[in-house]
Image 1 (cartoon, rainbow, N blue to C red):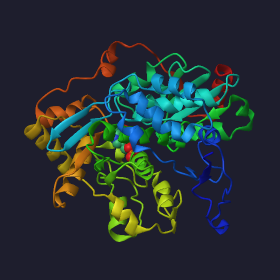
Image 2: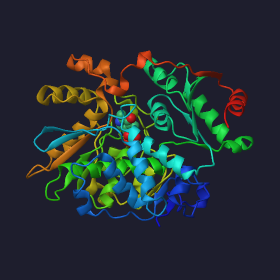
Image 3: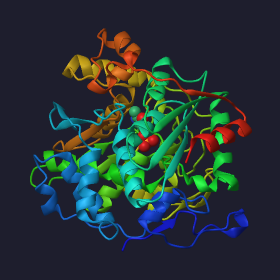
Image 4: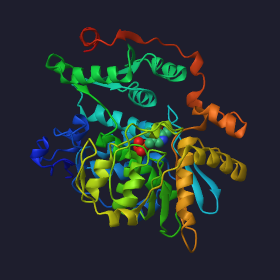
Length: 458
Ligand SMILES: *Cc1c(COP(=O)(O)O)cnc(C)c1O
């Protein structure tokens, strides 16, 4: 059975952290989210894919790839029939693989309910939580959001039995469209508009988690460092290879990266045996990782830079601790390196560059003019990274897949300005203006928040 350890297990206690040296099950890692020493949970064994099984996924629905890949991690903790229901319920949408030119493809991960790749992980994690919490226990998910993550989590849990979700957002800091998305999910998902800033929302959530008098509410965070969100992000790499690869050939993958959770899914897929020739991890102008790969010195980018690809404005990626661990190193939450990873090996497997906002705009324009393919800023960073790596390569061009992580219709102003066209919104983003729903309004005051939680939640 696969067990999960903490990335902080080897920290010196003199660093002020008491390292957690235990092992937990997937169920515990999922429901706890984070290790007791604030490290991230990692599987102690990476299971092997049988490529003959993967080949049979060609032309099959996405959910079958999800069953195969996640089943390798979960088979000792969940029956196949239950997992089958979970993946079918998680993925009722398509996963387009769009040919651009030569051997280059775009994988569009933007057909879920919030039109971002985060739907893939959040939907499956929500259903895994509903399964693993057991039928008699209720869970309450608390999330603080400054925008899109909150709606992905809210939509993912919508209608999931036995789980209620409260999403706190800062009244003046979300866009009109984001507010509408959050306020109108409805059902078991409540939006709470806080008279304050994002930090106030985060502090209210933290206080509620730490409040012993609220322990009976079984709070969980469902946040992005949960291993339950990493696992579903391994699947689409395997799916893409199954659809596109000929005769077991290797594939180059480019993943526009912010907190590195998405790219980590590809790193694990390679370790499971998927023939990944290179993992390209372009960032925006927050270039702490490409600088580290080039020079071997890690420095947090603080404060982070505000770029067009705003979901990647990250000055210290939370999943970097997992990458370091996989390469024999340790980095803590603050970005202090306790042990250096094997840089040579990292460079063999990973290529990373920083893509500026100007280059992002230029890429959106060029790709549309030359190939008729519409990219939004995150996908354009991915494409630019891929092209840069391929330029340095000699010999026959390998199969390459670059990820589009959001739908272009989420960035209408940028697309209209650069391309002179209005991107068609996907099904999920239509009719937003007609949706109804009002948030709960609360001051940034813990007493008021606590009273509301006790009155409203079971
Ligand atoms: C979150 C996000 C990313 C970055 O993904 P990470 O897993 O944080 O690296 C890229 N694009 C979009 C649209 C996102 O929402």
